[in-house]
Length: 121
Length: 339
Image (cartoon, rainbow over all chains, first blue to last red; front, side, top):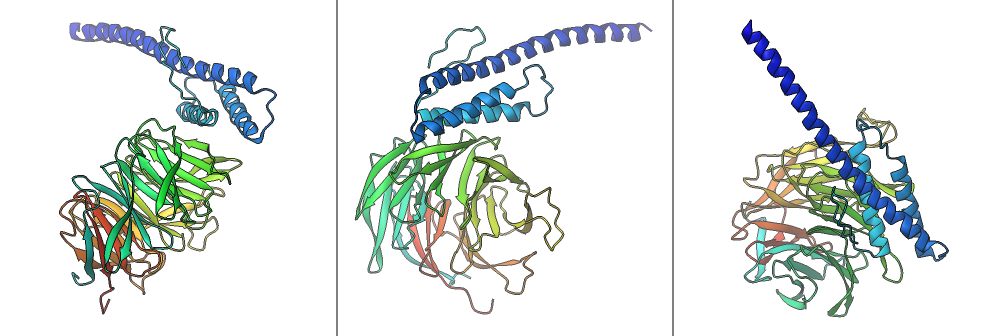
């Protein structure tokens, strides 16, 4: 009987600790993804302003990639961590960002940190 | 079996280094080699021997892993561990680096030109495949970055006549890509190999794809379109790829390269056991379930791992190979009698 009670108590305590750890991990991971996508979005908005009014054919290709990236970011479900294509879509966003950098001739070199500082392009 | 492959010449192409890859120009008159010494060398025939006609140095800071000629033969692309791809323009015997493609995060493992000459593909240890478009002014633009593989991508190759791209990876799969509504997508994944897939080669018709792997097998894959006669299931309007043949038990180590002769249909392999092998399809075999026979096996073709084999596109039976021992060897293959 004591064995059973001991097991029960231990299980509950373990579950509790597990929940806390899981929540911390989730928060950290979510913040990292949010921070990364936030970077891409800021980058895209800035460049959209910079390229506004440019009319060459090359620029229209850049604009197309820019709008595509912004579209992907806006469609990304921020409030559903159980979305089954989360990582697939995240990879697509990353790929579009890299393609955009190549078209704009910009080297992406920013550090992503949860503490919020250290963003340099 | 030994007499089917005869040595014509051997050259110390990249002394004190590894020779990683070879590519014949479309005319079949020049062979480009690249290696760990960061150089690309161009070889031409003079009588019975092969001499070095050009050395392309100052292009890369690290090992050059692959080279590829454009379909017109006027350009050569070189992919390097320094994360860049150089495009060289040929001017008689001189080559000038006209552009350097950057963007990959680390080592570029392969580069390939599409048959139209307007597209180029590169792949890298950063797990991505990039598709580049080139315009009349030799300007290159990245049109797509594909993150489908989950590990290092080892090789990319284009279909011989369609704008279809295939990639091979450390994640044990082969993936196929095509353009859909202005963007490139991965539309098929070929699973079956039990380890890294190192190289790929389409057959002359483009209907079949050969892949070679660290699992010591060569697999032949065939594309089946929806509503095919053979009753192979397809999902929606996407073609399905099926493994129709596996060559196992022939190689004792990793197979690093496979080459499908566009003139004769013979399959050559480069193996980590220092040997070169050639296979030919049995003429009476069922096209849906082909069988291949080993028609040549040359142990000790090189003194170390054979990294690449390349069939000359114009001269039947002329095969070039290169190795970790830094040498390039030229061979004459003759299909043995009675097979």
